[in-house]
Length: 176
Image 1 (cartoon, rainbow, N blue to C red):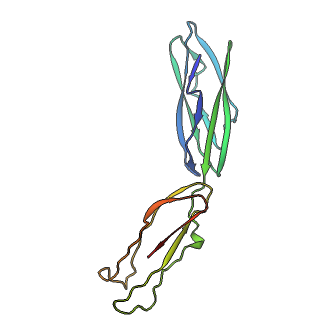
Image 2: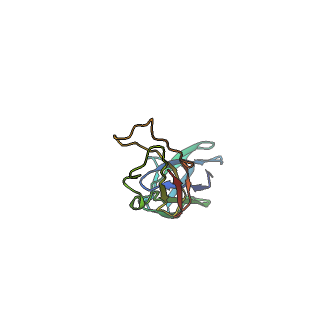
Image 3: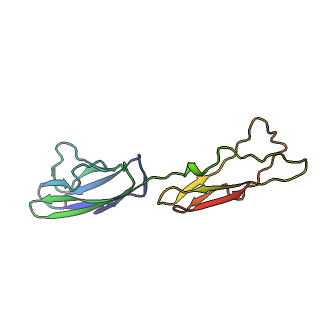
């Protein structure tokens, strides 16, 4: 009896998403294999094990496909196991997944960047700071939209940082 893979570790997943991976149980013996899969998580809200009907017997040299889905609903690391039992042996399959709540702390962002009155030929700068509001690194991309009153021929933006990664709970700033 063989199960592939023998450990399942889901990559960091945003809360509210899901990912499914496939496990295979293979009969390496020369007789029909009767087996049972016992999820240690009892089909929780985070892990779901899908075992199709009639999936408890495998003829010699054949394999059966089993789907395992991770769908985090709250941020955190979740770990459990699936127990594969046959008459002659028992195997544990470690299952692990981490759900992350990726979010920019929007309460600290300006709704509007106002440069005030600027004389012709003068230069004005504003600093915008982005704050990562979660415990995991977060990729970001900054885009700038001009208001209706601004003529794009007279406004130049020179952001040195338009995309990147924010470390957990750390800010990144750029002059505009």
